[in-house]
Image 1 (spheres, rainbow, N blue to C red):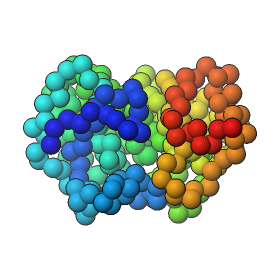
Image 2: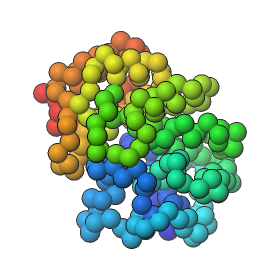
Image 3: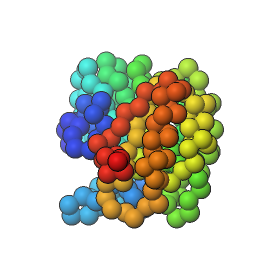
Amino acid sequence: MSLVKSKGNMYSWITHQHCHLGGECPHGCVYCYVNSFPFGRPEKYKGPLRLIDKEFSVNYGEGKTIFVENCNDLFAEKVPEEFIMRVIGHCRHWPANTYVFQTKNPANYLQWLSLMPPNYILGCTIETNRNIPKISKAPKTVERARAMNCLTGQRRFITIEPVLDFDVDILADWIRRINPEFLNLGADSKNNNLPEPTIEKIVGLTEKLKEYGIELREKHNLSRLRP
């Protein structure tokens, strides 16, 4: 498989994406976009977690911003350490790129910081401040926020997508404490019937982020929730 150019609803600031990790993500989020491919979940992302050997021969070149494992969660608790080490090693082999990692288990970032490639940014998905059952098997969002607070000195970003119903002051304060380089905000694009916030809450959150000086990068799918 070749390096894939970023397109569609992916982050606009990403140039490429690439996956070494096959199998089904242990978090099992009900809104997972991997399930929404035209013909359902691809075979590559079914079954037990595994590395796809041919993906380690991909030439990353230089000057790119690469989202690594955009279809899986490399730092999920059930991913073997040797898998993580090998993927990071492939990135380190091509040091003249920026590598984007994103997880719902950011506590696992801590043990890998010394092995990261020279240029990287660590992201975390926090859909809400509330504990909403049956949405995901990932760590609770409050645990994710606490772990991101522990990552000092690294480039960090937060993604709130799909945004779920939340409490403005609480979620805004979480973000203020984390103080990410920027925040991505987006809505559900796949009609998953999720509990969503009101327009007033969206506006209230964005105003708080502006007050705190945090850069907001809105996804185009957020327009559905806008006035």
